[in-house]
Image (cartoon, rainbow, N blue to C red; front, side):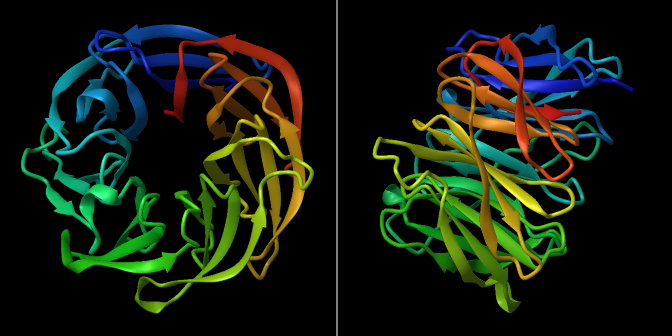
Length: 337
């Protein structure tokens, strides 16, 4: 099957249609807009539950997370309701492995509200469990959250407090409170983390320092540094901030996007978890906030140039530009469904 269905998220303003369905032709590299879904403003992150066909989105500017029931033919997205996230700028969300919870990262402070999901409808229930740091709450900026590969912990990356936190998760409940799993140098601004497919390692990308840190996963949720490399060329003297990180399915290459330098950097991953620079290539646009890594393609969402740029991915993980560009309003998220 050469055509894939993708959901995209965009900043739109309060009355916009930020959630869209796209068609990506893997043979030609062409992207087409299939439809836009009403009532979906400022979608900065997307998650999808295939079993219930429920789409979860952040409405970042309205401090909300919402759920939509996607028709089997993808023709409609029926609203199931929004819930307040309790703080400004919810920017990331993840579904728990068993599909019973939805965790949201609030960039406006250090909070991570965890909503229960209605088993019958897929809707989010009110009154989430709210996880916080042990620091000044208003100084934090939760930017990423995800369950561990074993589903026994929830991790949170806090850009404001320069740390990764984890909390035990057992039988659908949290045990104790969040504890620091790893601390970066002050001001580094950790943004996103990715787990290696083998579960032994994790990789942390910082927004301000623009570094990737390879981490070994330890007992009790701790993370230990293996090495740290810059995502930017040594001779670059301009301003740039890190955005997204993703690892390929074989665990041999990881990619990050650099806003300002406007590039994608690829690192080779060794069997011991350490990384080495593989490639740095122009993103083909301006402000690559996100990218979607597929089997043989990588699609960059350039927020400020308002386009999606398609790259081929070689067998060794090297990227090459295809020349395929699709214009889209302020794209900041992509998800294959």
